[in-house]
Image 1 (cartoon, rainbow, N blue to C red):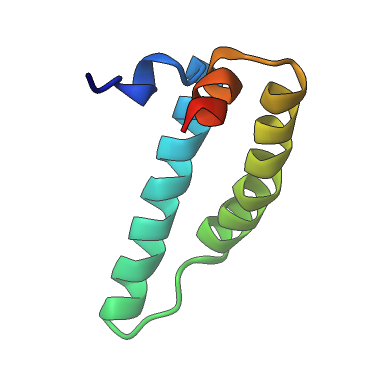
Image 2: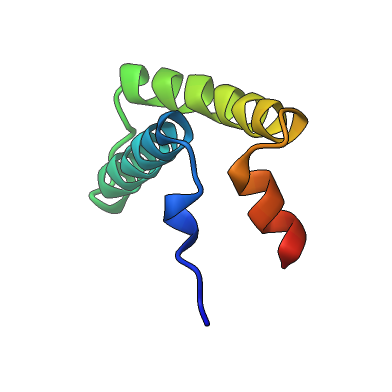
Length: 73
């Protein structure tokens, strides 16, 4: 039986992960057309890159559902 892990991921982590994914996609688009990504995209990408690991550590420290699921695999 497979378990959909997205049910166990808290909304705030899910949203920041999707935002991070979108930023990476936008940056790669700019690079694919031979341009540098706008500075605000690069700055936001760095900001989210720093925030996401902290959120994951916080979730792990609280023993949340995602951490329990991760421990089962």
